[in-house]
Length: 188
Image (cartoon, rainbow, N blue to C red):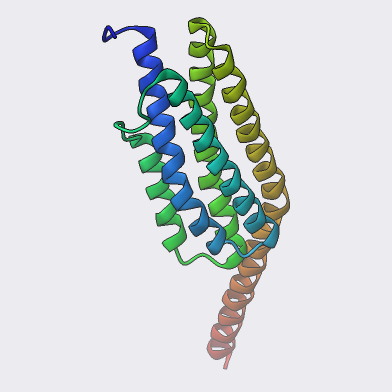
C-alpha cells in the first residue's frame, strides 16, 4: 500500500482509535471507583461495557481489511487519561470530585467523537459501507455518553456550587466573628 494514500491514513486513524479505546478500558473502572454519585458510577460502568463493544467493532473492521489493530499509540488519549488520573488524585470532596471527573470524561468523549467522525468520513470516501455502519454505531454511543455526562453535570454542578457557597458563608461568618472579637478587645 502506498504511504500517503487515504487508505493508509484510514488504517492509521483506526489504529489510533483502537489504542485509545483499549486505554479507556483501563481508565474507566478507576473513574467509576472514584465517583461518589451512584448514577455517575453506573454511567462509567455502562460506558466500559460499550467500550469493549467499540474494541470488538474495530477488530472486525481490521479483520475485513486484513490488517492488525496494533502498532500505533494514541498519545492524545494517553494525555487525557493521565489528566483524568491526576484529577482522581486531587483531594476534592465527593460532589466536587464527581464534577471534576465528569469534566475529564467529557474531554475524552469529545476526543473520541472527533476521531470517529473523521474515520467515518474516510470510510465513506473509500466505499467501506460496512465500516461506515459500525463506526456510526460507535459514534452514536459516544454522543449518547457525552449527553448523559452533560445531564449528570447539570445535576451535580449545582450541588458543587451550593457546597462552595456554604463554605464561603462559613468563612464569612468566621471572618466576621474574628472582626467582632477584635473590635470588642479594642473597645475594652
